[in-house]
Image (cartoon, rainbow, N blue to C red; front, side):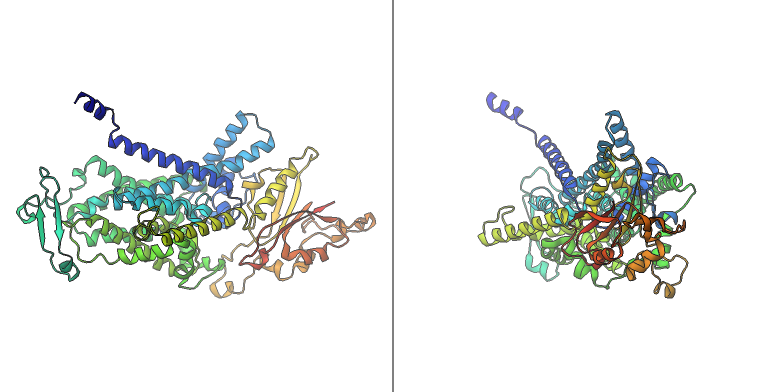
Length: 626
């Protein structure tokens, strides 16, 4: 007996085991996403740099640091919270680099890598709280929460986008954190719940499935305890003052994160409006409504004050970027200047890109969740079914709302990915049973095939597709770092606007660079905007003519010294830079224009096998002035 008691005392406690597992999962995800961040070598979209790192660079190193500040910041359309986070990262990285006595090359590498590591933490937290959300919905006895973790880890979209410095990535992390902290049990058990006889083991309720399917009140027989009709009902959820500290903290944490997500991306309100309406209307309870409204007001007001302070410090005046964002992009429809898509885009292209091989399971999960059938709080699994129902309605409503906006991008629905993974988990586990190694060889083969596809897609888009525009900045940076360089280097990018990262990757102030612009026509009406051409459009409509009209006399770069002396001087035109950077598609034109000049190809890097914008196809080419 003494030995048994000793063994029992020495055995790890379940709570301790649970905490250890949680920490192991979190640390594992951090390691994974750091590797992820450091191995992504490709370009996706300009906002990764121009809506976060460029303003952050300006905040850290000053307005004269040659950071590229786009029109959205001049018109105060963006919250400064996101850039301020990376400004803090830049300050820390710069201080560490100086303290360690790094040379210019090492300091530049630190400044390039630092935001990636910070975003890796954000990405790991997104995975972690998706797992926590699944645990909140499904519990910990089944395999669904592990399925969600697997879906997130092996998601090509997650590998491709989660460690990129998009505001959408932070928005997705804040959203899934808020959902994981949301007190589902407290809200969904608003109806009277019967007290259980805790003195009797094996308490369970048998439900007549036939009655349930026919929509009748199911007959119940209670085993091991009194019938529920003989038990008094418990009271409804308490008001805010009666909330337990744990639930109160969870509710406020959730609402604050949700409010921050809405400040970062105003369209995030689609998600939280749906959840709030469902909670207030579908689960009516005076105490719950009062608690939700009161907590929402306090959390929202706190975030609003914080946001106003941050934006005032950046813009120098009180402003509401969310209002400006909606006015410019929705009311004036300026977002359509950057492209419009079909109304079915998110359903026919967006979801397949977001989910890849998880799409069938997500569709089935949505269908199952939207059909909860006859349900009551007394039934086993009530909270799970209703949670999945709320998440499914939220996903559908958000997709429909985004479909009404002309300008569409897959990353706009990024916050829905953890939700869809949670919904996909149940049919995934049912299909690959037992999870994670199914007994059926056919289904095991399907799983291996799906994982292989995902890994291939993730590797291709992270390591190959559009890597040239990243590699060229590394080449230029290293050119400046050569010991023989004693003066500034001039670079001209003859590419569609924002084709390469800017100061966040060029780093050195000695690189004096310019690029073609694509400023939107802010003062024109809709009809006039239809015929408007930005600088990049004008260039690509007639590259040779644009170079003749906007660059200095070509004689100034001819091989013959006599010819160079005959060149006319015009200070209103751009001087020919030491490095000209362009895509391969432009090579025939550039070779013809630069014939007999001192320009020679000095670097070429692979960029794409294909691209939806034919101007960006092929290699990236650098011609140097010799």
